[in-house]
Length: 628
Image (cartoon, rainbow, N blue to C red; front, top):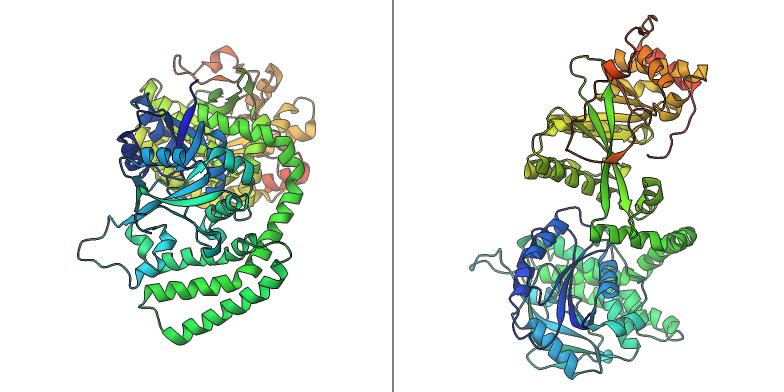
């Protein structure tokens, strides 16, 4: 493989609608014939169609400068940039945000400057604001120039210059170019100012990176030949947004100040900084008065001074929590470092696989449609399939469950659309995690995907475990209502595993109950569990809910579930999990092949659902099994 001179890295979170402009600009770069370069989109665990946008571009992308896709599992700009550095093949790495539009010669100018100045560890661009939503007659906020730097607008003339450490000014991460070797040798993998958005109250992680590089003895420069336009929508010019932005920068300032000092200087400098910040805030209040709401520049300056004054205490609290998290998770992180990397590569290389297991009707009752439960497997680099319990714990630890759920839904809809209307009567059951249950944007995502792939919503049934459901009953009620409003169905899994009041079922309008597998497995040799299963089945049917017996592994269990009147059965004794296929019909006539016609349903007296469930609670205390 030929060495790569420069990598253009584009970290992005939910950049589906923004990436196209940046990629189109990069495809039109000029003057790059004399060196080798590549483009890498770093997907920071997005929840939209970012990955699909990149895959579509890759189909027609010029081979002279490849377009790569990279997945950064931990959210936050610092993590995305670190992932970009680790995966980049170029000696130089140029960072563009997904709202940065480079001039046609930006890449060539970046390469030339890096080649001509080997002593420079990092160098920034000239960045102009592109207020594309504003009409010509509309003015920018009052005194906007005084706060333009907070929006990564850098206009320092047309002469290259070194950023003098004494002036304590550095370029933003947008449009920045660094040497990969310098970053890897100077910058720690985890920064103090790591954060996952402005809600964390912090910013300036790009400045922390540059201070590490500067302290390692490398020069940092401003290169005006590299011109970038920063697309700024109107909502980023609103006073509330700007105040939040400068507040985050101010709250991060103590960390940056202390980095510029030696250890012995910090205790002496701290009270001096504190006194000076208080003095500046008082002078600003005297100069501008109390009511400055009409002056956006002055309002943001005051917010910045106030948050700078609070910065030491805020960071002390922030770092205290971070230390507790790290100490509690050190062993886990060490033992699962490789697993997280495997998970990230699985997203990059699309190595997740959809499997399925049939859920079949026990009788010919009208409306009992065949199901298939969608199961997930991960194919490792050796082609071996990993079961969920081998990768889901890591996914949960790093908040990737929602991402996995969305990938599964999107992939299933894509495969249904590709197969066409072969089996319109089949229902596909998709398991949702606790993260997805709590995701307030889940319904919007489903509506978008169903419309994009033209998937009939009645083909999808979503499933939550009983233990998760009980912990989030108000949210679950809302979700079921929303799912049914768009035409989807809902199933509750692992029923009977939780020790909780059974009357919650009367509050949930679910379509199906899937009974706890450990209970079903033992009904032929455990009378107590047999009674519990009978009661749960009757309770569900009394509420008008279809019941499903899981873990049906032999003919004895099958006969017993038929005798009790279950609507559906599922298990290894009927069908083992297999790759999802649309080549043959799912439905198998179980009534004639396996079910024994002469078995009659137990003629026991009907009980109220509330009393049945209360009885089950007192009799059963099994824990739910691992996901199949």
